[in-house]
Image 1 (tube, rainbow, N blue to C red):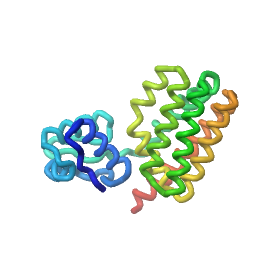
Image 2: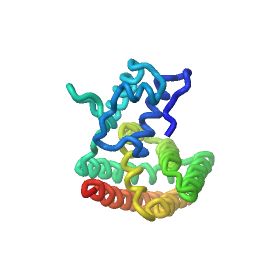
Image 3: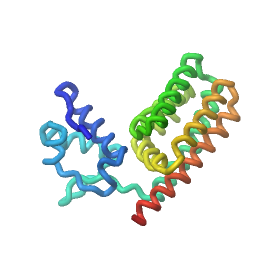
Image 4: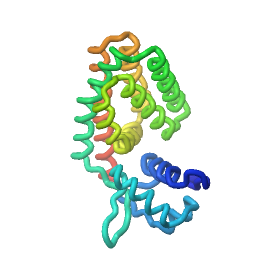
Length: 221
């Protein structure tokens, strides 16, 4: 995995690269992140690495422990379950609002994001699946028109993507996820709020079950 960054926008690139490495599983939960090694991999200074790690600590992807240094956060199932509870509440409402408020341009953009997800599933490209899913939900949140819902879910964005990576690691989960998101999109395009809410809830519930199985398997291993 190529983690080196270009000189322009070093700080934001370093954060993006490290975030992707964590979400994709390149760095495992609980793994120590050695600053000297990250400097070598990223090709940047120790100060830039430390700032990037601090930003990821703010996203709850990294934990910095005194006398031990930074490591990848180990997300407990209890915390994961709470995140899924919040998602079920807010994404269901966001989908219903998007069904009422989405413009033609926004519906078309959501369809494009889902098409990108389908391509990633066909290519078995895990990182592209995460990016396409995040894009689909970003567009839905923008279309819902509720800034508070959008703000709360964006605050969970990094951890949601981490959980998505785990849930979609399950055999057959990615194609099923595509069908579930298609149901959300179909309801939004049909301007059917109740159907959109139901589809969004079913999607979160299925993702939660898959993530729980994946995390249990990781603990056994």
